[in-house]
Image (cartoon, rainbow, N blue to C red):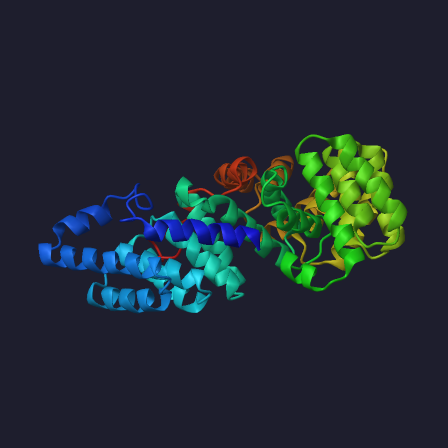
Length: 410
């Protein structure tokens, strides 16, 4: 995978540097800690670092790793040593050992975004996707040194985790900033296609399947979204029209095109594609949700409410289905029923600002002032988080700070 190859070459260059002051440039603790060490300790670390660089020049990585292990054993708080050890282990595919090194570094430097990001990358390779997602996001929130070129790598792998977790809309949001670029083409394009078609698979596994026709379909969908990201909307739609003629029965193809058309404001055309998806896949929840969303925007869709009800019946744990049903019930004047559905949506996803806002509005109409105030406050707290994701593709640092009440990340 080219993205991983790129990050490895960048990590190699960093290891060969005399010190990692650039990595920890925003932190003064490492420099201060080093200055506080006795001269003999500093000289010992410098000598180990010099010998490690010489071994790397000789392509003797196993010996360099062994030497670094001895170094961090003698100097447990040696941040540069833990970083060098972790990156060497990562480069040689020893992800479990690398994870342990980055865990130690993150404990020593909790504000070092690069340590958290590399920890997340190791966990991704170990298929530990939940912690990988959290640590990749934390690393990006703290900030990643530009010279490592880790930002795109972290964002890409975060999107892959979201695809596997079937959180396709979030994955598409992250990939949108990558698909419009000319570098890292194939793997990102395939990921964009997988997210749009709602396929919980990794690009690497897709390529290994050797199913040329399927790969071609997914790649072309990704290309369409790359063109859309560059505002080449006509060309993107032409790709979809061509694909639909060739793969009329492909699951989620009509839905993916409808979602793109909806984003472009082509609501009538979007409705056409969502309804076409229901013919191909009668049990499609995404198509029902797409139509329900359109029903909120227009008054020309009398079946929007029944479709939202069907979506809830098919996926009772979908916060979006409950949210749309609640909104449509309120639009129909059934405010108490709608509020109950919105409450269910909030229970399923308490971090959605749109749900909190809609619920606050419903409570206001029901004269439940205290409840409305609580939801409005939640909305004001959550909105900056969602705006940060939309604008920069990352969560803000405070989300990962510990709550003094229980010591857990908020």
